[in-house]
Length: 93
Image 1: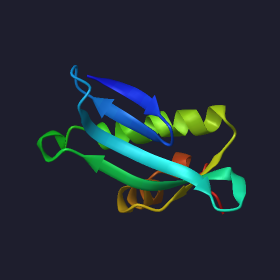
Image 2 (image 1 turned 30 degrees about the vertical axis):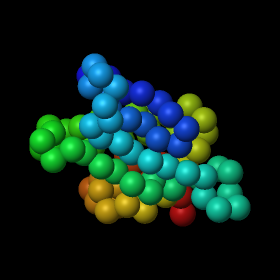
Image 3 (image 1 turned 180 degrees about the vertical axis):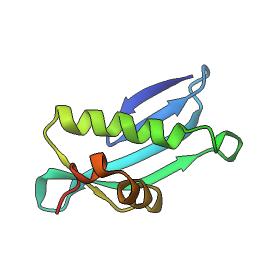
Image 4 (image 1 turned 45 degrees about the horizontal axis):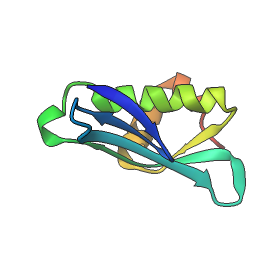
């Protein structure tokens, strides 16, 4: 299994390229310096294995490399940002 970077999403795939988990983001309307995290999904059979956190970590690394701030919109991202001060430092105000 591996992570694959596609336009506006990071996908966790099996060896047959089936998408098992995804985190989606998009530029915030009118602001090219902020990415909104709009959706996080993990296949029910894989939940509880930390895959959503790994996807978010990949997105954080990508955001830092591209000098972007993040705006958590989906419920998973909102909860993750609320409990992690390191993520809060990247959060768009």
